[in-house]
Amino acid sequence: MGFREISLKMPTDFSEEALEKAISRSLKIRGFTYRIEKKSLDARKKENIHWVVKAAVSSPELKGGEEPLLPALVIPFRERDKRIAVIGAGPAGFFAAYALQKAGFKVSLIERGKDVAARKRDIDSFEKSGHFISESNYAFGEGGAGTFSDGKLTSRTKKISSEKNFILQTYIEAGAPGEIAYMTHPHLGSDNLLRITANLRKMFESAGGRILFECRADDMTLSGKKVTAVETTAGPIDADYLLFATGHSSYETYRFLIRKGIGYRNKNFAIGSRVEHPQALINEAQWGCTSLKGVKAAEYRLTDSPREGIPVYSFCMCPGGKIVPAAPYGDVNIVNGMSLYERNSPFANAAIVAGINLEKHLGRETDPLESLEWLEQLEKSFFQGDYRAPASTIADFLAGKGGSAIGATSYPLGLRETNLAAMLPGTVSEAMKRGLTDFSRKLKGFEKGIIMGLESKTSAALQVLRDRDGLAEGFENLYICGEGSGYAGGIISSAADGLRAALSIIGKE
Image 1 (tube, rainbow, N blue to C red):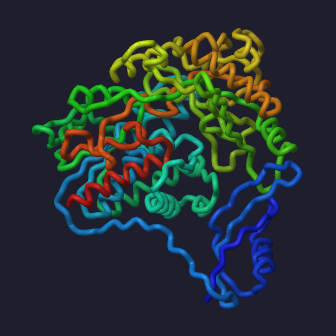
Image 2 (cartoon, rainbow, N blue to C red):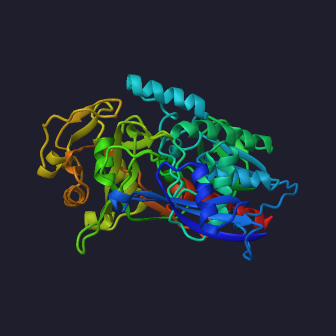
Image 3 (cartoon, rainbow, N blue to C red):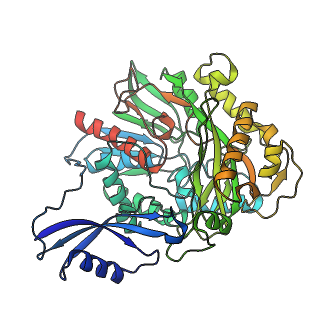
């Protein structure tokens, strides 16, 4: 049996039969099996947009070659008597808990929010009524904030090949489409994530794991630099190891961890707003046509990095999606983006954010608690009695004014027409004006969109002091991982961060 890897240019609407014929022609063979290793869209020339498909082909008609083995994550199982408590059921917390349970530990996964089905009902109610539901919203609940997003599975984190393969294969086992294993920019979609997240829970429970919903961790018991129990709203839970994977929205968790002596430092982060356009406008700008057979919706990634001044970039672009009210607490107002698997909404949205170093912005040193307070107060300033999103046209934002008619939007709770640029810190809004002007040159019609709300959750503002495996500095059995640690961002890198913490514990025991 011989083996070859080949790269083929295929039409955007190619079929499985067409791909098989292309492989046969390219290698001059008839009998073969194949696996798609990579699929990416080449849209550099609008008159010749096509898929580039990399296929791994095995055939007795080929000579030589050996199929490479994918990096595999080995989780050795044996019965262990150690008790593990994992706080937070987002990607980092779930994958840490799942790996530890598969390794034979006794694992309790503790989530302050509700299970994903109940969470979805609460979010639907919130979007219809504007009545905020604490502990069950776009920030808190099973699956974490990423459950109600585009479900992007891309990551720039290096040296996580085995962890990434494990994560993707686990998602596929839980019902994710098989294409996530080879798409250049794979995504799950929030509709798929509802089902996938529930299936992941069943897999964890089938392995013997325990999950506690509507259970918030408020404190922990220490013996020197060792944790002996976590204090929760359901009572104390003893633990030989404790992992926090609570995301970057749980400010009270940051505060009690700092109070308990866990070290944090400030880090650069980004804030801004979310822009929205008709998806057809983005398709036309990127493809030269309003639709393209075989491709769901056009995306964009935009960056403005001047030699002087702070960088501005698009983040979490959601083609065919909607903008959502993503407040973690009742007295703040922030926005985020999401989309379903088919990406078939008539709107496209993305965060446009400016990088910020808070100490440079304020012109003085700040400690982590001060930084957290500054960010929280900014988020509160966007809440003016309800969850309407402050908004303007991009043209008005650039002019530093408000008042122009905004038009249709996907945002479910209404817009408040205002001078949005004046609500952001001055250095941020000026940088965003420069960036939006640049993006309007790069993407035809970009200036015709609208801009709304505060986007403040692109990454954590703080970073815990820890070792490379996630062990908190100075502690023997306390791990902090995922987005809330300040070392990860997004589903894949957060899940991989949780897996590394789990593997560290497995290696010790």
